[in-house]
Image 1 (cartoon, one colour):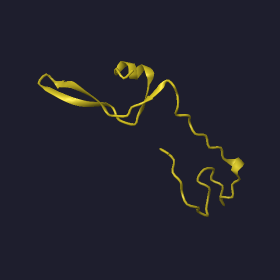
Image 2: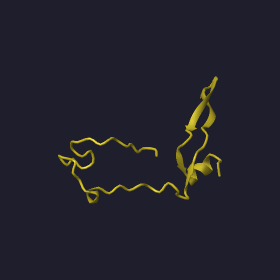
Image 3: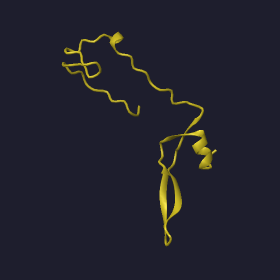
Image 4: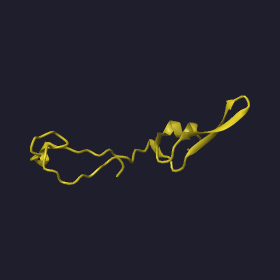
Length: 82
């Protein structure tokens, strides 16, 4: 899962709450995962690149939205994805 890291057992302070011996109970920690299936959010599957004038004589490609990013419905409509 993106943004989640699993670490090996380490006898020392808890990395979540700082308990000195790490003898925390499951009730001491609540881990909540965000629901990524929001109907108003869209996952961009490919890089969105637009050509823009950088200077009056130079036309360049600009990365507007990278692949893998979630954008709102209104932003997707502005980019012509919906």
